[in-house]
Length: 68
Image (cartoon, rainbow, N blue to C red; front, side, top):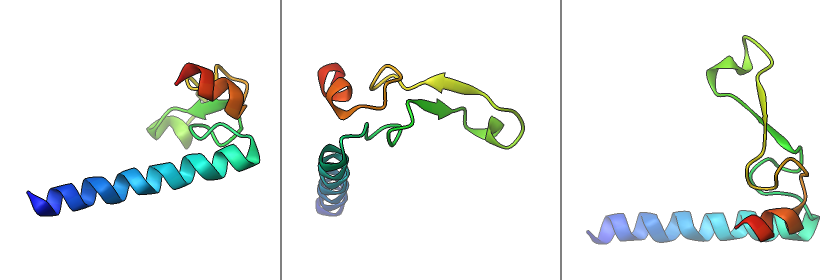
């Protein structure tokens, strides 16, 4: 179980760094400030967009912080 805990801690630190970088830039960490995300495999077939649930489509870190 020590190996799994080490991986969990590494992923948590990586996520914290990503959020800190997004905060310094003022952008949503889920959509990288775009305000929308694209559906998985349809990215290459059609333009299937949906508003980012983290920031409600604004792309702002402040809005993301209120949601989370």
